[in-house]
Length: 492
Ligand code: GLN
Image 1 (cartoon, rainbow, N blue to C red):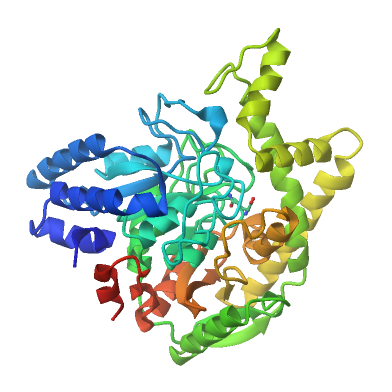
Image 2: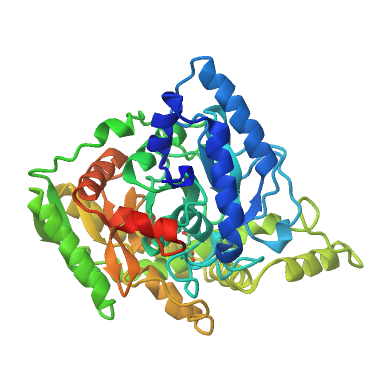
């Protein structure tokens, strides 16, 4: 076993017993990145000097008696989350060279806890996408099959975790970006409820949907990270003042008698049969553990895609208006300010971002607002109501995270609408503001499959509880991609 293979809680155990130092652990992960990342390309930027300096400081803090779990543990941060003094681009050319003068609240919280920041992970530009193919820099490869995408938009995080190029990580989820890549790479991704975690300093995509979420190697690690980042932040008025429990206290393998809802609408036509088989087996496992599984209905599921693809681009078009070449990043001079503005935005934004700005601006324009944005918000209320009704009858709702396995790089490049449809199971709960987790739940054609578990808003502990019970009863998370002989040993 190499140190880079550790989870957060395993690393904590060894650090607190003084069996390893943070410097040793950090050096191991940095070496792993050096050996592996030319194949995977999970990182936009690695900051080894800073990481080692933080590791040394963490070792001193621990020697002085500090015993917090994150102290000295290497972490990767999605490049849409600002990091003071470390270039933050959201994988967009328009922010190339932007070094934030401040930390996002989530960055500050984990830095104060003594986490070691390894660097910034790749994503789809401004978190718009499914695969990291929309990154303005390069595509990240899935460690399970280098010809396939790792998912997105937090694809760099998922790939880095699967390839053991980090111990833990923070991603963001607007409509699936934490959960879908977790599913494609056999790792854990938790989207917290809307309002649970501060977005201060997180580069905005769609403000009524964006959330920061832990992406980790197992469920316990997700609970540990959520303990640090959850809670009200005066700097983000959308963060809610709901008490933050100790999420690790919810990790109990006993789910006897819990009610699990299976939405009739979630086993969609055209779904990969291997994914369906894996999820049906996962549900049988929950039953064997004593859960009571019953069918529920979420009748407005089919409107999730159209509603999201109106709301998210509309909000994005407003949020992205600030990239004008004057305040941050790229700036192309022109004949006058409008010319400079057009040239900068024309050169700085990629195709998908441009498409969304166009769609969103159209949907918000005079005369169309009522027909599109307002209508979409009304249907969003119906989607929310579906979940409220179902979650009155059951404790959690489960289903596939995405009805397919990781696709080949380039497979959808000619047909973005086909890709929009793959989000069918990750958008409705995001629109409703629910917490949801994706946990490793099997394989189809040798590629990972994730099961999604969701509950009522602010019931992250319920989601974590069921996810933990499932994880403890199965072996899926222990499988590692066939990157090298060492990883193979873990698989046996
Ligand atoms: N795939 C969705 C999109 O392209 C969700 C992305 C996200 O959650 N950031 O918008």
